[in-house]
Length: 441
Image (tube, rainbow, N blue to C red; front, top):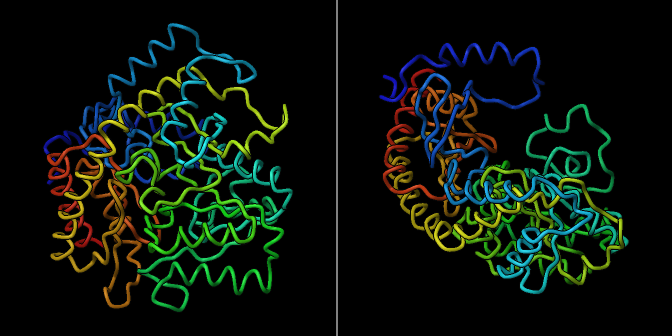
């Protein structure tokens, strides 16, 4: 039976009408999973054009970190709009400077930093790559299988979470070598510690036989891998990468576009391991829905850029900076801690569910960045791709918005402001979706 708040079969008549209008005029390249046509949202709730209510546990791919239309964020945007809508980054304004000051106060690099403001995660990655090449004078990079860093031609060279993102676009930016990301659930290398195994592979295989370490500008990595399956690396991994980079004069870039800004229960995911990068990229949840990205780099690196070496037109937009400042205030003083505590409760509920459903192979993550891996058999750990897709579809029809990642992982990335009541409601819908999906898959 549909959830009480789903009033019409999905998609409803107004949604169907909008889909019909959209089909001839919008690119088919968007990876849309189900026909959700949003009309409005408040907090963790969203309503479609037919008046159906949904619990949103995907938050615009982790963008709506403070929930839909948080009043503090909305007011900050309105105040900025009353002043002016745009001044290019060729000039200055107070909110842009204050945002850079705030990032320094949060101290993600554990030393003074400078900031380049842009519009998206992929643009922040492009900026980080250009800076790394500019500073080091080296041409090569190392990336990780399963990583997602964007779809523009530079960042796409690093993206390897699905081959469809690369298909038809070769050649991308040259000079990128991919290595395995440590996955304890599905290990690719020998050894009980997959973090150490990956570091050993880079040092003793890659650098000895294929890629001269002296030519590597940077290693780009997600502290917790997102699109690749919400993979939490072993504790040895990030410290080992830091030591490897220091030995060879390589810059370490942390892509925290998805895992940053309180998502894992700390402001930055890398803080779980006490490791600071040379460069960090931020976006998604930074603006609570407004398009903003940051390249945050050690001042000693960033100040080497000469005038005109890099820039953009819309970077530092006053409305986006205002949204980011309000978001950081909320996350720092309330929502990061809430993500940690509610995330722990959510983990417990999912692990109880795992005991009742053999198709749940693993529950993993940190804070409110949680993956539920679905398998056809727990002993072989074979991915249950069709089941995962069916769960997303059934969840939608019952009033819960979800996304997948990795081979067959249902990912939970709700707004950071959710409470235990929201988790309990979601768990009922998840169990119903699993039961229904198992009946048809």
